[in-house]
Length: 61
Image (tube, rainbow, N blue to C red; front, side, top):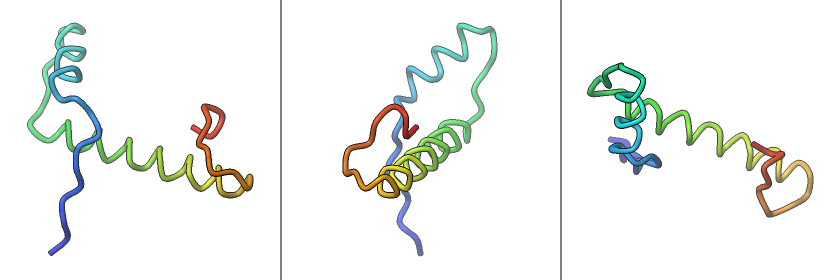
């Protein structure tokens, strides 16, 4: 069984932001948002490596 990834987002902050827009947050939204953050970071690291660097910069995101 695969180990569950640690969340990369602050759930209370995400929920507060969504609530401020007069919307509600589903029970599985935080996990999906965190998964998207993992994907963004993985792509940024791939770009960083392709440019022969070890520091992820804003331009990589």
